[in-house]
Image (cartoon, rainbow, N blue to C red; front, side, top):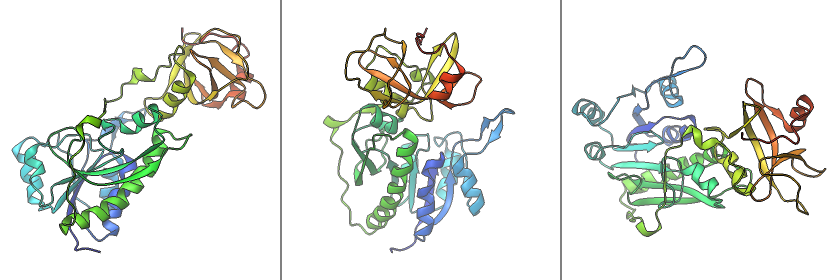
Length: 319
């Protein structure tokens, strides 16, 4: 183990918590945690702290939630912490040049893809949507661009056929936490030569929007099945039935032995041995519906849904 470092961690969602936990376990000192502002949640819409803030408060680590790091005051506050390194993972803000120069070892970003593939705000979702079979984690030195900095380390991770964005994030940030601790120590000892990214291989992801969860049944069933997994838990995937929102929580591609009868968007009964008792005819293939939630109702498996709504088979979805 190398010498203990003073580290500032910047992150927000629960799936990045393996990183600050690993830093503490490795003997490093978290001198401050930066996270997004508390956001209204629940029926009462009362402000709720991020998972990272709750973690820091339990550990007695100072928490900072500046609206921006582009102003002199929060920059001076960060400088006063005297960090050896700044570590960032899903913080939700791009750091300005002035902040990147505050720490001796710069800013290290833990990014859940093999850069330069899937730069940007939604690498997990884009990995699943693209049908990638292998992904990984990249530790890179932040610069002023969007995930364009020189690479310090990478590690690969298979994408499982049933992975959702949620399950993939869970594994990648555990992997990333281990890789970060190892990389931080080697970087501090001057043992790593940063490698520039190949711009010719770069792909970009945009922030997700709620409307992207709408299922377009003219698309192939294989793509729609990936969409259901990629957009779990947010923004979710949905269609409409009888004027009500119908969430598709789990679905799977089903390839019939012979052509099926039915129009695009129509619900059909599936035979025994299929992934679900009902599916939707798509532009190519059938999307088996495994778990559904009708607006105002609880989530249920497809067989239970069919018992409660006898007219569902034969219906046309999406209108």
